[in-house]
Length: 249
Image 1 (cartoon, rainbow, N blue to C red):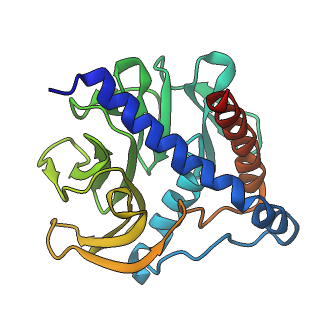
Image 2 (image 1 turned 45 degrees about the vertical axis):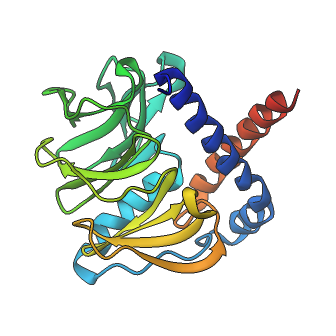
């Protein structure tokens, strides 16, 4: 039987390997800084979900460390143990929302969703005023994505799951390992399948009709990175370089 700590380490090795691919996109990032346009190609969403998904996509493009919603900037405060803060876009108002070491934040109209490092990367949500903090699941997760009142997330060697935004109706969508979510529409979940050479797949949001879309290996999605988000990704790249350099020693 594989021990739990070994399972986590094997997934972390896979995560570092995929993140290292970002280094090859540095030239694209530099070009994006100059023209302030999108990096890569985002899969099209239906018209009635474009605005919602735009916010989610911009959040994912910055690694889940900062997101903008309703004239409030939600971010992880590195100087305060990665607690979640919010600040008005004019900088005049600022508020601390939680006391958890947080990651992968996503803000909606009423809630801020995040992975709680203080509780082994379980999914939590908290009201945008810092009240009504709730734990939504009991398994460690690697990423989250929210569309149409559903949370899509990866867990258990990177398999894809979903649950309602209140934590109900948890469901496994695939059996592939080391998956990275790249986009979710009203009908399909698109992902990079690490157990099949990083090829792009899609599966219905109910877990049926899994399809391979390409025989080409793909990179982690950076679609939606613009303006200051690009600058942030540049900083992330530098951190990844340090991690990769240390692992080679």
